[in-house]
Image (tube, rainbow, N blue to C red):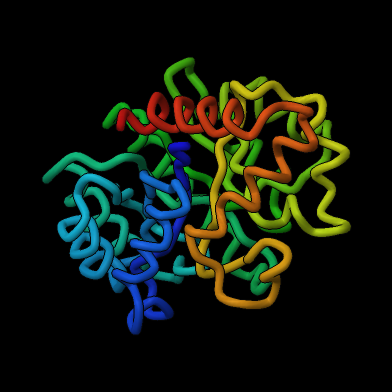
Length: 255
């Protein structure tokens, strides 16, 4: 099987001791394509170096993570835009809103997201959205920006069936990761009613490792565990889910 990990921070410092071994393990597990979201200016070099080392497997995005949005974030977004003008990327991202740690910068996060939504439209790229404790606020900005050309994915989706329907209505996809394997992750309430054409698989490594590795460092080689859970919830063969989600990723990210 060919499986696509649509969201993996494989360039992270946590993989410094064994990055190439982790890449080998992923390929042995059938994960042949890995799409890497950027965080901020500090992650660009490591991400692009890994892409250069494995150009047939690893594909970079360019964006500013909401947790890296501070007062004076404009300089970082200027760097994002400069990179988008310089060379091709798979997507704008990851962008979004995160109110889990700090609600005082909501206005700055909203402005940064709006700018990145417009960059995605300008460059005809999908946008990869991070939303934590801010689904309604994120959805409102996406709705306001949607002119029929905007597309992308709500990554690490763990919302309600109603929220999933809202995402799909906007023309966006749902990124499903390790949370789907958690006992109270909620995927059993959402996925059975979702068509395969709306789904991507992801690890979000090194975070959110699936069961039975929960609490440990996640890596792309664990994606088959997510695949198995999604296939079981949909009542579909694993090979069919792998093929469909890989096809979805290839179309969305123009891989």
